[in-house]
Image (cartoon, rainbow, N blue to C red; front, side, top):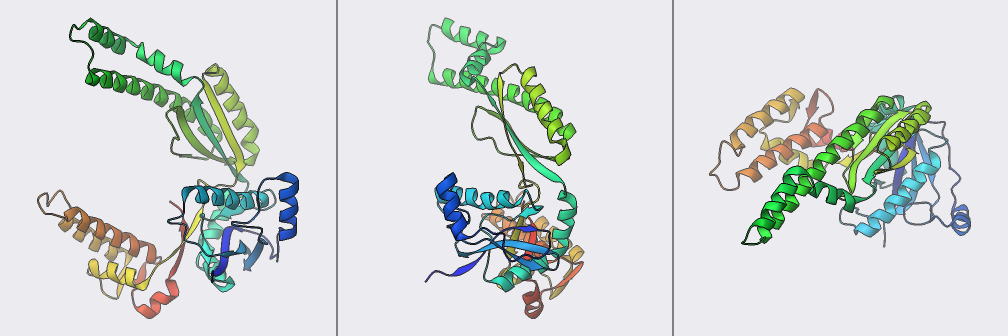
Length: 356
């Protein structure tokens, strides 16, 4: 029988509320009239808030699922639903998004998560008050013409002419070399254009994150964090870029959004066996300070570094294990000194942190 838990979409800062009014009945009606898909991560669940002090988790009763090995199409569909709930709430509440696929067993565990992350959450609310995110993707409007233009650049053109003049003909290796030269020329153009976009837009933003490019046509994919009051200035800057590039580049702006790229939270549940193994690997006792953990890692990393042991089979794996152990203990040890005793560990099995 499927296990039902609490799916957490995000955290808001408001007075306690029992429901955000997104009921199954309203969900079905909205789907019929607007046809934008169900609210809730898998179906038309009622989305409610669960309070702790002056913060509230936005959650729904949902079948617990492991998102690690989920099919990409299902993952994409759930991401859209996850964000739809957050963006339904964000016009009225400041919301800190949670990582896609965040579950708690029950309401008590949701409250435990809120209590463990309380100070971090309050700090983030102070940083994102009045802030929004706008994502800007820039792409070449005519990519084939760009490739043709790059192929006519001085060095590339001369090289192609020398190949045509060669009595031996053009080999596959020659064609590959031309392709690489064109690719590098396009990359240089991308870098120059991306720099101009970034330099122009960051002056009206407070922070910038670079996202992965989706395809070769894409020049850059940025997320900008800014005050809501700066939205108009931001779009004027985009319009200016559009004029400067004379239609050669298309700009796709998505927003205003909650600060997904800058302040998404994740919950990590550490197992005692994982922590204990990491402690033993770094030769630590039942208590250690952050500084002692750092020094233990440095000592082990020095011993197992691949550069010092180039001929030892499997040394890279040993080095990676040491690094993983250090990261585990760093996440677990939230204070200057921490205990690795099993009873003490049970009080700190849940970690709330910013998603990297």
